[in-house]
Length: 247
Ligand code: NAP
Image 1 (tube, helix red, strand yellow):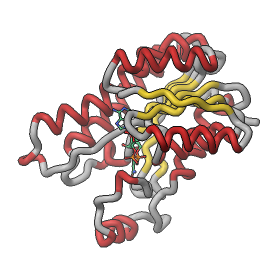
Image 2 (cartoon, protein in one colour):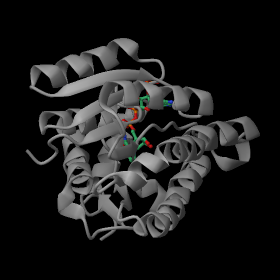
Image 3 (cartoon, protein in one colour):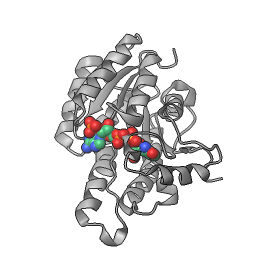
Image 4 (cartoon, helix red, strand yellow):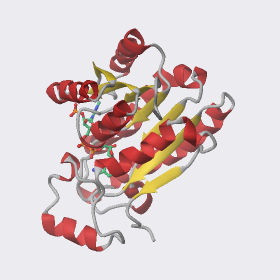
C-alpha cells in the first residue's frame, strides 16, 4: 500500500480534517499517531477505526502550544513506532472578530496554537524527518491565508505565516533529501464551521466553481500524496484544495 510502514504524526487528529487525514493514512498502511488536546474519547475512536481497517495507531495527548507536551508526545511516538517519517501540522483554532474589536489575547492565542504549535512540533520532530528515507513535513494552512477573510485577521496572518515557514524549511530540509509542503484547504465541513450560518455557507458555496464545500477526504487524499514517496520532487509548494475558489 502507498503508505506501508511509514510512521505519521497528525496533530489535532481526533476530529475534523486531522481525523480524516489520520484515517486515510492508516487505512493505507501507515502507523499513525493520533494527537489530541481535549478530545480523548474521539481519539480512542480514531485508533479503533484505523485498527479495524487493519492499520496501526496510538493516541498521544499534547497541547501543541506547549513544548514540554510535544516532547512527551515524541516519546510516545518513539516508544510505539520508533522515529517518524511524516509530520502533519494540522492542529488549529480560530478566534474570530472584526479587527477593531480584536484583543491582544485573541491574537496571541491563535498565534500560539497555529504558528507556535507548528514551530514546537516541527523542531521536536525535525531530526526524525531529516533522517527519514523520504521524510515529509506537511502544514495545513488555509485559503484564508491567501485571500484574507472578514473577522479573521489573526487566523489569516497565522495561516499565511505558514507559507513562508514552509518554503524556508523546504530549503533547509532539501539538503537531507526530505520535503516540506503546505496544503491550503478551502471551506471544509467540520466543527470549525459550526458557528457559520447556513445562509453564509450558501453564499460561500455560490462563489466556489465546484459548487460545494470540501469534504475531509478531499484534503486527506492530497496529504496522502504529499506524505508518500510519490511526491519526492515536490517541495516548498502550497497545494490549494479549494474547489477553484481563486480562479
Ligand atoms: P476542528 O474541527 O475545529 O478541529 C480542530 C482540531 O485541532 C481538533 O482535533 C483539536 O483537538 C485540535 N487542536 C486545537 N488546538 C489544539 C492544541 N492546542 N493542541 C493540539 N490540538 C489542538 O478544525 P478543522 O476544520 O478540522 O481544522 C483542521 C485544520 O485545518 C486547522 O489548522 C484549520 O485551520 C485548517 N482549515 C480548516 C478549514 C475548514 O473550513 N474547516 C479550512 C481551511 C483550513 P481537540 O479536539 O483534542 O482539542
